[in-house]
Length: 131
Image 1: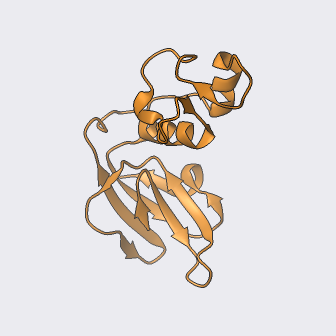
Image 2: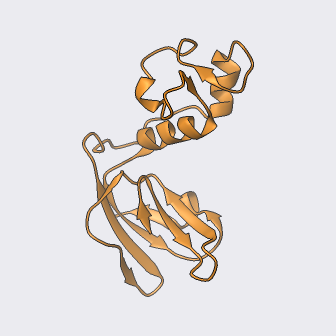
């Protein structure tokens, strides 16, 4: 299933998330095309025409560097820059889920991607390549 920032495979039997590939943009153009063991997907968004996705620290790295009150959330006042649009529940903090979404927006890249399907977990670095 194409989704925002990733392609995900679910079990048709029980709905379990089987594998995924990150780094796609949030707008899929068309439908995936399956040819043998390869799935082709095309995604595009404004600003996704960068050669290399932007490096973004993990949530744990951000907690280590900017977390002042030790509540496992990043206060918008603790962070340098503007992150208000990443505060999805509008509580004034970024939690791990919200930071993960922010990282996905930074990693997004316009591309047509070929994915050899199969396996389990995150296949981004093993079974996917831009064409």
